[in-house]
Length: 198
Image (tube, rainbow, N blue to C red):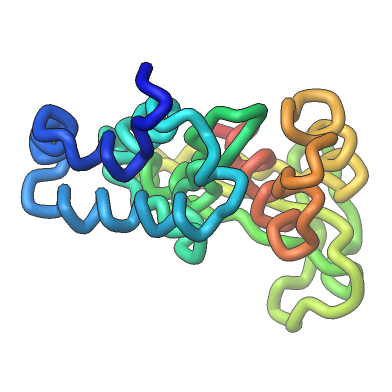
């Protein structure tokens, strides 16, 4: 690969443009623009291998998920000089709903004023979501109901989420890890609980 190849020049190549047009149709140019904005807005990602940015973007395009970080469906994140595709919890919800099998699916934080108890055997969460959450987040709960009536609830304490991240997230120790960002921690934890449930 030429050292002069940049993410922008790679995405300007006609075969790359055609690939995204095949995946996204009329949305292709807007998607490519959003990829370049994400890359330009992240100093570490802008130095990542352009081919890995392309591969991560192609994954998002194939799933038809926007990669705008503010939307929370999917991200392109830097890791050891490369870019990786990472799906957010909203992406998992979106893909589940597209199957037509889910009547309801959601995940949310549980604050200390809402939580009472959780029975892991019966998957019964005793929490009051009719009150506005206040105090620290103590856990995360995911729930779905299929159109055939099957229901499932998964609750993880915040400590369990942190332990899971330390054990399984390759980027957990990185200073640029979303797990280290207080504003992204809840989103990462919700994604983990939801992914584990479905």
